[in-house]
Image (cartoon, rainbow, N blue to C red):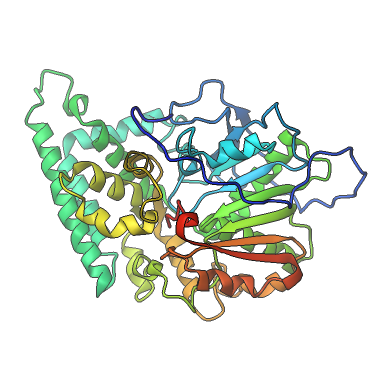
Length: 455
């Protein structure tokens, strides 16, 4: 939903995508689907009443393979005023982000733009992000559990919050990252002051502490409570979340050749590269007709990526002290509770968006609604992208970049010249591994700079 009073910038110009054709009569092309998981999706459905935050035409929920997670799929139906494309489109967000970034407001909605071009457009919210829910955790399937977490808060909210903040600040390494840890402790103390200030206005005879608990702090506690359930890595997304979504989209959109077109931003692009690599190594069809990656790479080694300051690169073992990083809590809280330009946001802002790319009110909505909690296990696996050979699977034995040379899927790889997290040199390092006749590499700069470059 568009926030009241928000004036969003004009939608970015369309990329000259020519890698997905208009719908045509079935040609009878044989398609070999990838192996199916043994566990079928027990419950898949379209939600009749969407939450207010969901601005898509439809909201679907699907069971992730071999998991207790129920994933959210935002669907944008193709415009009736144009011909429907041959292949449905899957959009994948970056780590610690949800679907909001693809549909910030009507004037700045990549999802709406693509559906207007005739694509049956789907945005996947991976486990732990957005409207995806855990069966025994926070979400529509677990009101009792959420109520219990609120009850614990009523008893000792200050202690619960500060214990989590102390462990979180210890996650960061020495040097530059130690300053981040210090800022987190300072921000946490400021939030604690707000919590304690709220408590003194609560009468024991009127509804309890939670009745007057600020809505922003409720969101903080929800994300902190989610930390205990964050127990997955990149391979879980690749092996369980992504195949479930691809299969479901096939059944709903029914492309004639069984293929889908996919665009991935940051970690979303990493997942698409990894999906191609796994398919090549196993000698099977990936099910992807073509892909576009936005600020994505499997190998950061030649670049001076700022991500190395946010990941436990120097001391991976330290990450084991913290199960997850509540990125959404930290960024949104810093933005809301600082009276002057947020000192935490001062170093985060350049990582989120290039200067001048978003109207301040649109940026406020993005910061408040787009970021989620990210598990330490996922961050640990991403640190392998800073090692020789690039990103590996959780065992450390499978190099994802190594198998891209066998790919037969067309790739458009886009980099932004002001992208500090995934600089053009990092993007190009993966591009070099793809057969030259199948890859196109573009660097946008100036007014074309990336407008969405969160982790």
